[in-house]
Image (cartoon, rainbow, N blue to C red; front, side, top):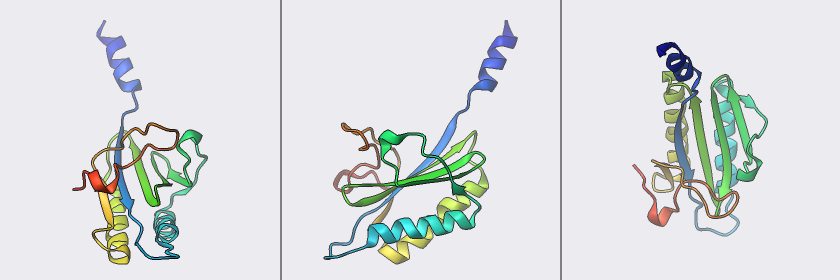
Length: 141
């Protein structure tokens, strides 16, 4: 009886995640969202992640990159660049290092007030609206 339980437990593929957003700068013709996507893509590609198929088209991802068990996807919600980093299994030191490098690169470029980590990825009421809570009610850390 214990064997089926162990097999079922080992077949589960839990995931760990990190979420962060870059709020736009309030200026006309601002390209901070586009610049944030470009910066994140450059750093992630330098870490060996490559473009991967977008599996959840309802989320309106702008891009997804991955390698083995790690993936990062980005999209825009209300003018913010939003990113979801998923690690299947357990959070590895390499993933944490990439997360820190992304935040450490985004904050000087866009300002610490504009870049935030989110503790949760909130379900949206409409397709493609899942993401970090809006800045006015953000649960930043």
